Amino acid sequence: MTELRRARETRRPGSVTIAVVLQLLTVIPFVVGILVVLVHGDDAQAAAEAEIARQGFSPDILARHGISFGGSEAPAIVLVLVLLALVVLNLAGKRIGRILSWIFQPVLFAMGIVIIPGQLFTAQFLASSFRESGDATLMRIDAQALVDAAMQAMPAWLTAASAAKLVLTTLGSVFVVVLLALPSARAYFRKA
Image (cartoon, rainbow, N blue to C red; front, top):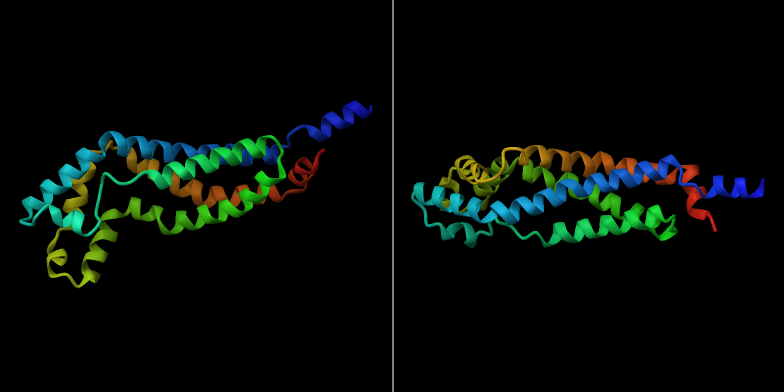
């Protein structure tokens, strides 16, 4: 009877399993985004530069203002590695995984609200920043045409992956925090 009870207590509860699945699902759109940028980023940047030239501006204006469709994927890679480490720790029932999840998921939530919409609504964000820059040249750039040109070099489903990333970083993060706070999760992380 004692062994059966111990086995029940050490079995991973559904709340932890669902939290881990949400963390793993969050990794997928980030990995997809990294791969898309690695494969198509240079073409997207070249298309954006061609569009800028077509609009009558020097293509180096993009680099001067830090606009890159090739992007640096280092932050996304770090994020993926952190999420994978949390998955491993949470699956193993390590308290530090739960604690770090409670710290990291709200940060991810904030990123989801602040950064990821910029990936979904790039043209609107660029147009707004061009208007607010005070730079007469930037204000004349057709941001929608610029983004459309770059997006032509990307897979059509990239917008869906970005939308999934937004949902998983925001709602998914909230659910992970709540699931790891449930009594069943607390008992699992307290096991010997």
